[in-house]
Image: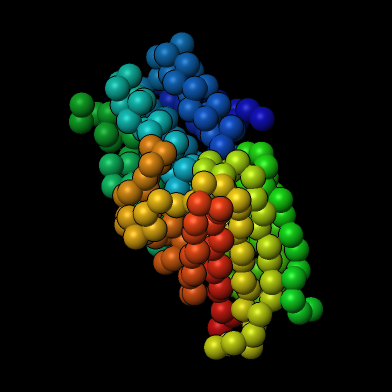
Amino acid sequence: MRIPILKLHEYLLISVQVDLDDQTAMQFQEDLLSKIHESGATGVVLDLTSVDIIDSFIAKVLGDVVSMADLMGAKVVFTGIQPAVSMTLIDLGIHLQDVPTALDLEQGLIKLRRELEEK
Amino acid sequence: MKGTLSNVPIAKELDIVGARQTGRNIATELGFSSVDQARIATAISELARNIYLYAKKGEITFQQVEGVAPVGLKIIAKDNGPGIKDISKSMIDGYSTSGGLGAGLPGVKRLMDDFDIMSSDEGTTIHVIKWLR
């Protein structure tokens, strides 16, 4: 299973619509980095509105991709994390403190633009 | 609806997703809130991944139980793997022998209400319960 990655101007947009298994998450990590490389995108919005579970493994994969993209010069913002998901992540002891987040796609794009202008 | 509700074998990576979906469906049927459904599904995911990662094979059993509340969902994760060498260390946040976040077992304990673990060189059994409030 592959998660589609869309390009919009200098941004990449991803909306995760499937229950993430380990393999799909790892594949996505690889796909996103290649896409950043080939498109020269400077910002990525990863929308998690439809994701109803993030366990410690998926959290690690998603957290890592933020650091990896950062090394390549692209900022990643997570948007739309469900209330139940944020509660379980904190129960798990996962705070994703270095990961920029926003309420929804619109806020995510605004945040990205602001972060990229600061650079 | 009493006793064992379902039994999910864990032998491949995709079984982790299968187990948590089964668990979420059962939690929904029992009347758990959406937040508790997410907690239960996440706990199952951690338990199933531990089986897959450390023991290769095992099973997750779902039971309806009664106790401090009239309805509880008990989840039993059982494997015949090499066992956990140091249980107290495995319960410390951030401790991992697999390069993971080390959030698994201590996380499961916080996500659920009751938590019991038995481990020897013949395998590991973890019992957890979430009570319907």
